[in-house]
Length: 390
Image (cartoon, rainbow, N blue to C red; front, top):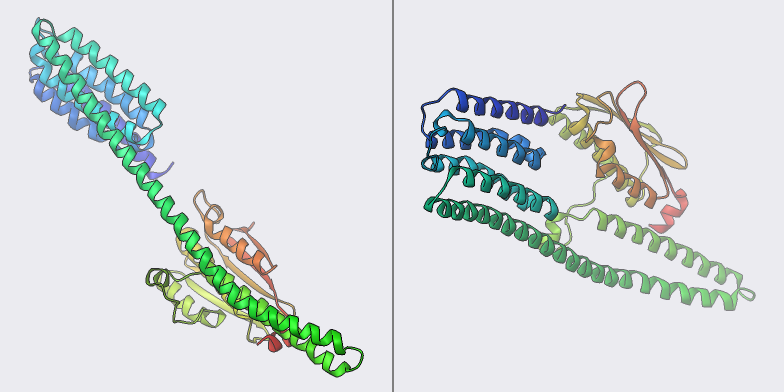
């Protein structure tokens, strides 16, 4: 049971006790005092209101009705004089009703408004008579209409804000697509033109001048690798855009981080309370920019999850430079996956997408011995091909 749920239950119990004290502990108090007490007691249901607005409305209805009907001061012949206290008691009901109208579905809001109206009309009809009946009915209806109107305005304002935000996002997506189209055109059109020319030259001289045809094929290969590498860097840059660059409309000036920056990342994580043990294996060598950045981001996201969810002060990061692949492993001895932990967040999904873009493999989940483990394997291109592409 979470802390918020416990606080909600405690608030509900305290509200019931407060209503009981108002009914039995102050028999000579006026209706106004009882009404103010009922209104203040309703503030104890804030936790219940956030978790279950309908339950909060039910409790406030019963509590306010009990205060109005059950107080000894309301047992006289003419109960219309105590309507001021009754109005204050049901003011809490109207406030809760407005919250339900603003946050819940229309069907639930309609049912809540109908139930509240019936209860209040029954109380007014039982307590008031003669000329005061009309006045009391008008006041009751106006209070409910005001609460529902405020709730509807709040709902419409929130829905309008969501629509505006969706429209802004759609416009931003369109603008970004146009920008990407221009960049890809500039990148690909030139390379495809060179490839087409070299392919034409090679096809014409392949029998008469094999050496020249071989050079044309080598140029095609180098241009293709360079273009492919540029496309991958563009995709990675689009997924990891600098927010400041988006706002200012300019490209980021700082180079993309890589595995060489792990020690600095570990120092930053240590400042957050988690000591990181970085281990490297294999022959360390320069990596393609997209793989280097992706490996760094995977470690960064995993360490973020450790700080937020693991509840431990230590974790281990292992980087293994293999012949054909780069292995990245992040292990901690904390709580493992929780209800709102890393296994259920968007970070793991982003890791899977990043690794899939590089045709790698990713596994993330709790360990049998305790803690959480993230392991990624990223295939490395042929070193000769990387040199030629560069």
